[in-house]
Length: 97
Image (cartoon, rainbow, N blue to C red; front, side, top):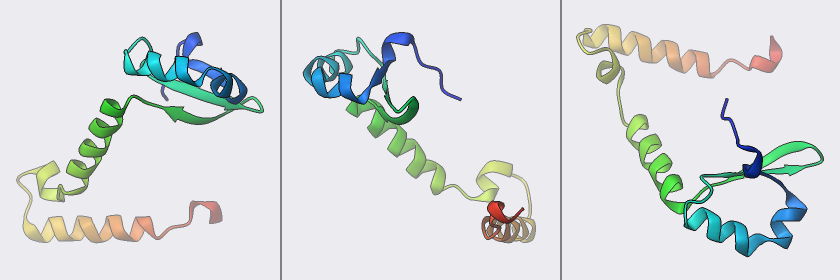
């Protein structure tokens, strides 16, 4: 779980009232991220654009990797079997357990 400093957790009302200040602090890297709280629950996280772009790039690169990229010296047959197993697992509705 991601941890937040006290100054990185703000209410939605506070964000609306001080939007420009928070945007400047994110842009200047005074803050690394902001967690937005509404009704005592964390509802969203705001990141600087550079961090968001880095996360998107990392996600895209990871989604292009194959089983062989992760496990290296396995056979094509074993890699296909593992991919089928992963596909089957994705079909399971965890809410039905």
